[in-house]
Structures are given as structure tokens and as C-alpha cells.
Amino acid sequence: MAFVCREIVAENGLSDVITVLHSKVEDLEGLPDGIDKVDVIISEWMGLLLVQEAVLDSVISARDRFLSADGSLFPSHARIYACPASSDSSLSDWDSICGFSFGPLKKLAKDALLASSPVRCTLKEGDLAAKPALFKYFDLKTIAVDQVKSMHSKLTFNIDKPFDSIAIWFDVRFAYGERSRVSGSGEDTLVLSTSPCEPETHWEQAVVMLPQTVSVAKGTMLPITCTIEQSTNHRQYVVELSIEAPITISKKPA
Image 1: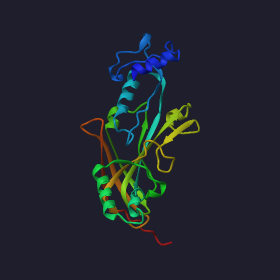
Image 2: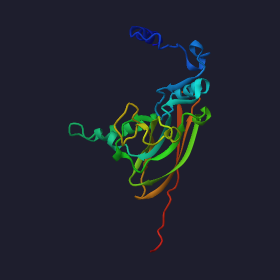
Image 3: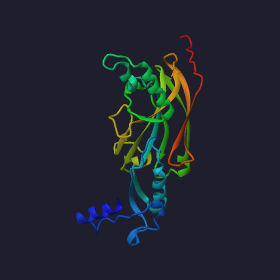
Image 4: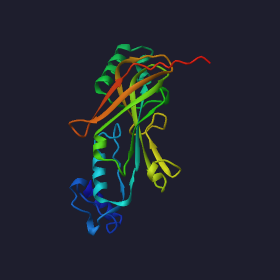
């Protein structure tokens, strides 16, 4: 594609403005024409679980080597969310095909999702069994590679219906104002969300199927520990989930 990009640049008369470098960013020995630092780094590095494919490692390498102290990255911030969910709507097609129920195939389809989890699925807001929780916050200006290799958090959810999976999604933020550059939020921040509560995107959601449906009383506080860790193949990530015994909240008499 680098060769094609050069041809497109030339065809549009921009060869004196745009320089195409044909290299992994990690292998670049320097920037062209004596440029030491850049003002902006733009990259589409997001994958399933946000970090799958580990392209963020390359962005961090470019940042550390080439971005000026007051430079900007776009996206500038990112967040990973998790939430218990139900797969019923995504498998409901098997309930009635031309008026016939295909229950055994529905079970096989669910088993296939379990074997290949996490899988890319499009969920709906109604599939969520609790209020989503923030799993990980990224400030692209400061985050280190080691912080991306292994991420761990214990989250507590107020469950309002049975669930058989954990949904994981992300948003990325383009903070271009002085205040928002630090916090990643505010009026001068654009947000690209892959939430099931927002319009569908190419990334959809990552869904980790559970071996069985979890049913607890509505309003139960359920602690779930989630770890997302880089595999031996650094382009892939492994998700580990641990669901603890529910917390019972006793109300004191008025």
C-alpha cells in the first residue's frame, strides 16, 4: 500500500507536502528532512477488546520517539467497559424458522460461541443485565506498554436479570481542548463509542460466553473479577473471568 499511497499523493499534486515512509514505525531510524519531532500522531489502532492485535504498542513506540512534549495523539484517550449480558436475542433466530423450532441447533450454536470466546457480536441495550462498569482508562499521552500487557480489575454489578456472558466494549476520545486534553472529557471532546447503547459500529462488542446461565435475585450485587492479558502470541489477548458469591444487602428497619 505504501507504493500505491505514493502514486495517489503524486496524482493529487501533493508530493511536496506528504511523505510516505515504507516501514514499521519501530524500524524507522528517523524522520525525513531533518525533522526531529512531530506535533500530531493519528492512528486507527483499535481492535476487539480495544487492544487485540497490539497495534497500540506501535503507537506508544512512535509517541516515545517522535512526538513533541506538547504534541497531541488522536485518539487521545480510551476506555474499556464490561457488563453481564444475555445472548438470547443473538440466538433467537433458532427459535422459529419457517414456524419450526431448532432448539438442538440453538444449543450447538451457543456451545460454539463458548468454545471460540471472546467473539464479535452486536448486542442491544436490552441484552445488558446490569449497568456497565469502567474496566480500564487510557491516557494515550502517558500510558506505557507494560500497562497494556496485563489489565486487571474487580467490578461489582447490580444484576437485574439472568445472564450467560460478559460483554466488553470500548470508546475512544478525541480531546482537542486544553482542559479536555488532561481528562479526556468535556465539551471539546469527540467520542467514538462501541457500546450496545450506541449506533452499531464495525467493532461491535466482544462477548465472552459463560459455561452456564447465572440467575440471581434482582438487585443482587455481584462481584466479577476480570483480567485481560497478552498471550504468548503478543497480537492476541486472553480474557479470564471470576464470578464470586453474590453480596446480600440487608436493609435496616426504618
